[in-house]
Length: 182
Image 1 (cartoon, rainbow, N blue to C red):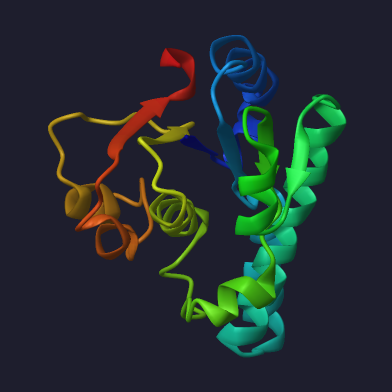
Image 2: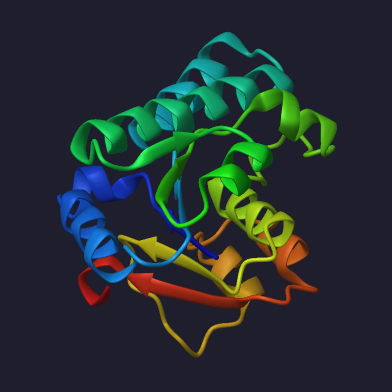
């Protein structure tokens, strides 16, 4: 099992379809789960929270909805990919390429803390851990210095602040890559 997180900014950078095409070609015979970032939908949640001052819990729920919207966008671009929302759904699908549209109830039961420190980066690590994935690949639109540690990548806003906590005992390989190098 491979988990691939596609940064939400790939849509704005114009590399989203190319990344989806590459996943389709490279991983068609591998159980693969794509985790969508929230992209511009999540950016709107951040702006709305600043304006209206609602809680991080509400913002977290809205950001999960942003990921679900991106999952639908991915499905619209790659109709042959399956949308799955829970760990059980993923385990049922087996060898297909799947798009994770996270279930907020499942995440709440897993005690995922509602904070902007936890984004789709950390959620992809949580998912990889739950699925006993062999690899977690994060595809970003930002340049990635391979010499940087995870904490340095978090300080540089390449991954979220909680990513190191979600990966500190990871049994899976972690790869961060720029979309143009994928």
